[in-house]
Image 1 (spheres, helix red, strand yellow):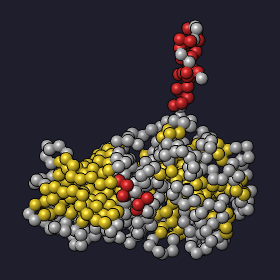
Image 2 (spheres, one colour; image 1 turned 180 degrees about the vertical axis):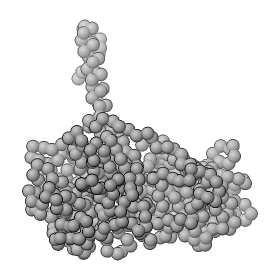
Image 3 (cartoon, helix red, strand yellow; image 1 turned 30 degrees about the horizontal axis):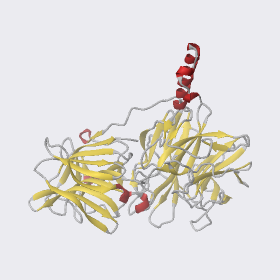
Image 4 (cartoon, one colour; image 1 turned 60 degrees about the vertical axis):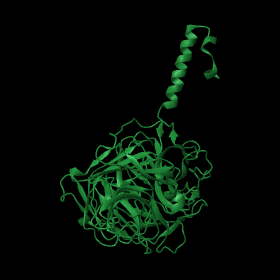
Length: 538
């Protein structure tokens, strides 16, 4: 009503001043505390969070990629910076022969008595799931070797009660064939040995695939948070409580406490959450969600939480979450933006760079040619369940430019090197230099399960080549430039074909630099000078 008034209808200067002050206040309130979801972009699912003083730390799933479990730090819950990775040694994370979307599932991060604990499941190609935890006094690392817990299931969590006892939770008992529910056992935190048999605490609120348990204690109640409904459009967060840690647990009357299943939002699959009380006393929830098309994977989002008079948490006022949230946040403590360029001449890469499974170190060298990273293609290609020569980073934005400077002169027609967009070993796009007789050819190659082909090709002049992939919600555009030439397009491919709706699985797109001998080790190194990742939107 007030916003439709004409200023001319206000009879006095005093009324006009009040009106303008009112408009300023409305504008301020509309923007106060607003933040955007996701708070961490790209393939960063299954967030778990803990607080030490006014510092916040968070981890995510990594599946078949190495190193495993990135660690992020924040001062305000909205701005995050990666400070390391938890599982950085093959002795911690053996990923040989790990299938796409197997590997590391749903870590939980906790802090107790001066020690950080990260507990997680390793799923490896049909073997019994292995739950283990590692410890560190600094979340940036170095982290200990694994301590295994003899309890099955996935998505494990730890809880310390006020009497000092430690409890281990997962969604199965002693074997993966036991009934799906939330199980708990008491353990020796020094050794991982169980003091008790796993017992069922809660079978969930009625949704399918109950998992992701986290335990909290507040006002005399033990609260058990779970994920249900499967990690797609029907995903949701539910909660129960009990006065006794062993139950029985009563279901919250408002379950699910978070779900966008029927919300008119462009944020889908909200679920798999963790709660945190901030240092100012406010409560928050981190959870996963995805945007469409599902090429970015499941991302990390944030929602405010209030506790109602009945002692149940209410998420964001109505049990949904949005891309733009107007909740009042902690005082902003942003970090510097991530650098666009990774300069391989510096002899290292940032924490965001990852390999497919455990890398073969001899295929990556900063010493062969000064100022470059040399990639030596092994006999393995992206199609093999192995560790091809590939160093990538998550696609974190729908619109982006990814550019590299490559010097590669293959001696054999089986050798290739260039840029790779990888969703799985069966669904990927390659922008690679190959040998064609006495010449070099640049090709845009696609693999969509059994459908393989070339979407464009061009001859190359002698010398180094700048390769660029420009992405948006519809297409990846593959471009090339040499010398002082402007970039020109070699081909386009549809983004949708690499989305999870087509490929299945739990991952998001990873893009980066690649080399392969396609059946035999390459005789020529591919020299990469730098790699730019330039976001063009959120």
